[in-house]
Image 1 (cartoon, rainbow, N blue to C red):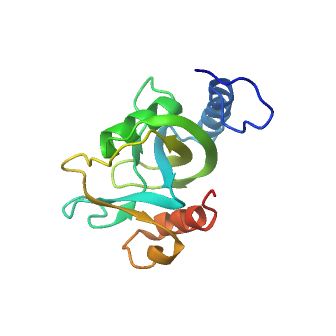
Image 2: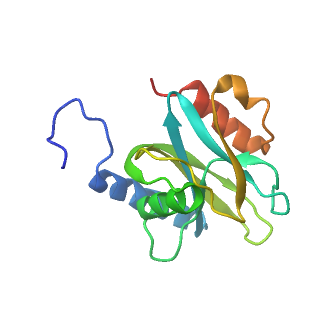
Length: 166
């Protein structure tokens, strides 16, 4: 069932997502960045889903948003859906909001640009992908300080939980 075009619908339509992606890719190209990572924010009952990296991985034991690298030929929206399903077993119902991005350096790539999207997920239980994450939590602003996170991730998650949708 598609959208009926009602004025109160603020969801992001595919053509809007494609337009944003074109702008983001063009800007990144001008900035000399060709590697992209997607973060996916899922809320339930005003709580945000975070997953914990396995101990022997980069940032092992740290909590983060589900997400990962954009594959060659893949759109950002396709990456959002694929990464959420692979890492949590949840399916995207729709992308609700684009939150922006930031750049960082990794051990293997000079600069990566990470973009974060808020999604509405289909109902279902979280099922973690073995080997990458070993725990998950639904958190609010009060629970944030008790979880280990990289500083840039803590900042991003803090903004999210303090503006959680009603």
